[in-house]
Length: 149
Image (cartoon, rainbow, N blue to C red; front, side, top):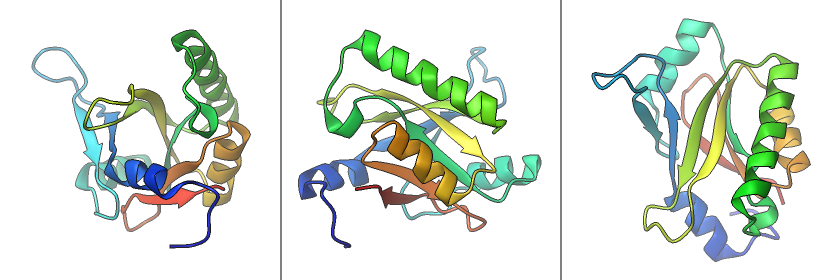
């Protein structure tokens, strides 16, 4: 592992988290099915989505709880709205998602799966929203944890 200012237990929590995004089809119950991304494992749904849209990169980013400091629901909602506005302005196709603690100790964090974004641009957005890490995948469709501090 590279040197980082992020505590080892926090990095471990990121590695154990579940990262889900809403698939574009409508499920039996009228809901968008969730696709779970596993770190360091190719994802066929991510591959299909990237291929369908002609994009060779993707990033999964939240704006919740900057630097791992738990904020109120209202503050997190405002941060997420700002992230959505920035992504829309930049023109990246984006799908809603969430990062979840599998133990339920930490509340779910609204996130976006963005397509066609470069790793540098994704890291810049993550840093602007004071995130410790993002997920990034390129043409191998493998989501990888990218530490930002």
